[in-house]
Image (cartoon, rainbow, N blue to C red; front, side, top):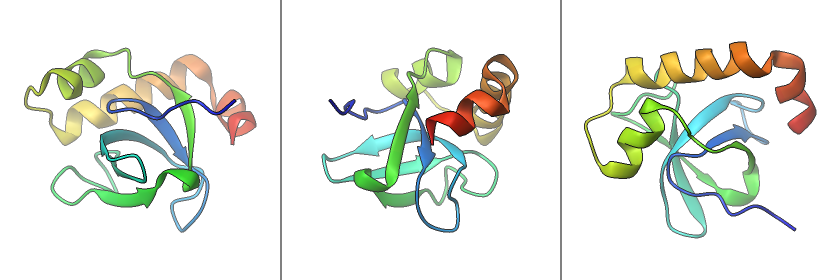
Length: 99
């Protein structure tokens, strides 16, 4: 059973030049998702990827995820900090197993 990817979820790119990278989902329409991580893919120019090329990692249960869900202003710094904190908590090995 596949997990439905929603706005503010943390996902991993499973294909393309950003394969293996962690991103926040900014928007989704059921086929495509707009993703950003605040560094290579900034909020000003998010990447559009097909959902089949993304792997669900975790819900965005952090301040940045909450801001995305409620429509508050989110900064690139918010995304970078949240993903760095997530990496520190989970560890690179666990994230790699998910991909």
